[in-house]
Image (cartoon, rainbow, N blue to C red; front, side, top):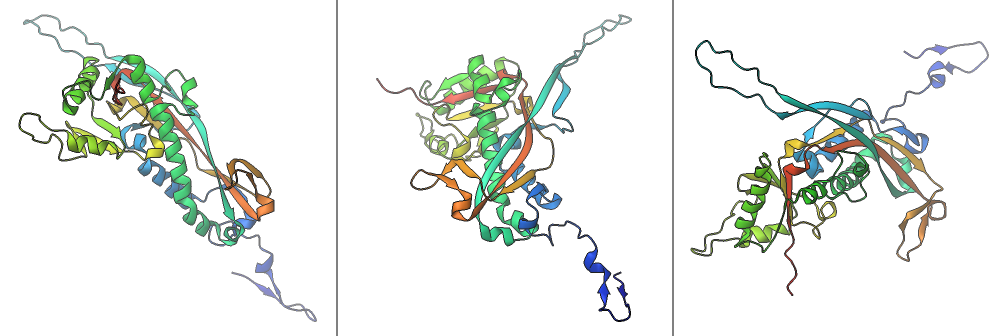
Length: 324
């Protein structure tokens, strides 16, 4: 409780005025808190939005991370049973375990804003911009994990993108190579299953829905796929166009237990009012100078890990070969 001290001949002195203010997102303006961690509640909501928005994170298996590099074991081959006669010694079954390491990499986004946003409290500001931050994060992560686009994971032994791994394993089927789309889906499933895996999920964009709608039996005209969210028992997740390279694949499928991801820590941020943003240009193609335009930019960073344990567990339906 604040105390008011009365000293004869002087004005009342409120001690509370000199107590150091506690940093909370409710009472601190962005202009007074230009670096640090995004407040826990708002940061947690951004991470939740990243997980909900990411195609890979919907399908892959989550691995908790407390360090930049996580090493864990996974079962490559299960236990076996044996037929035995009475009194015969039962053989000992050996489970094959392999070790894999996942490295978290820094993912950053810079977003320019008008100066009026600096007058928001931290809580209001991050609630306002969290959709922009989360969308930038999950789109960039997905295109890296699915196709290797600008991917830092490609330098890791187990960081192949889904498409790159499928290509290296020869698990590619071109649209138009079979009698119909169902035939091509079966062919790709067969390639994956031949490796001992069970494809349980497919990734595509909304553009692939038209292929699914038109796929039908040539004999009786019956359509194969009336539920566009399920293809031959595989759940279909539709990625945003910015997170999927349709020039390389029309759809990806696989046994997603063999793809892993992890999120290392809270989201950090920093605000600048005088930087020149070389990677962002205006309508005339000129870099944006924040000082000249009376703007500021928010830089947010987080650390995400990804790995492809078994590239052979994945495959791709590639675009139809051009007519000659």
